[in-house]
Length: 302
Image (cartoon, rainbow, N blue to C red; front, side, top):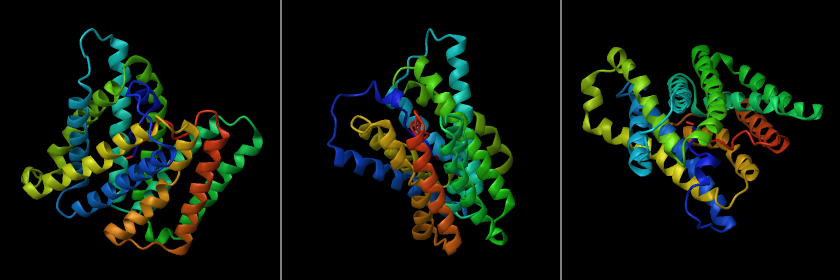
């Protein structure tokens, strides 16, 4: 899931890691996000997905608020509206993808989720030939359909919802970066997402389960793996990497998600599903290179 924005990066320190280290940091962030997803799915046996996503967002919100210490006084109504919209997209994206994880394999869910940013990228295509990347992504989705007997249609719908929210997150990121300095906007948006999702706990989550020490520890670990660790790694990497290069690397997320599902949860995908993931990864790389503003320059996840 998305964690970093270039707008936030511009206000951070001046140390620039070497190119190789920067690439390794991005790969570390990708692996951390998907490992977090794998551990979150293992936690579904003890806690409803609503509770798991709430714990993830609450952990990241606390850490980001302590880190950023955002200035809240003197903010205009427009500033708060932008932050609320950003937080709503963040909450919907994480809620949708976790609901999807509970029903279909992680790698398949993230692959479908990528359709959102890809469609957004297609709007920015300047040459008709670039539409080939949309076609390749469509082939990937069709290939997933060959295994539809193993895919819960509700899980697919949740992944599409997460993808649409991801596109909204990307669009909201630029507006937030213009009104909130550094990571202040992301910190406030994370808190907004927690507040918006809190009512779900009243109807779907047993309070005793949520207060179980083991659940709290694993939930906090999911928040750190899925948000704090990748955010820190990607923030440092963006001091060196061009946004386009960063976007291409982020296109590896569906493949990383499939590997995490295999290693952490034991989710084995059919060859046609791996082929679908390859199609979407290649389409994402192509779309990133074809657009002036890479589709993942305002990134993750969640």
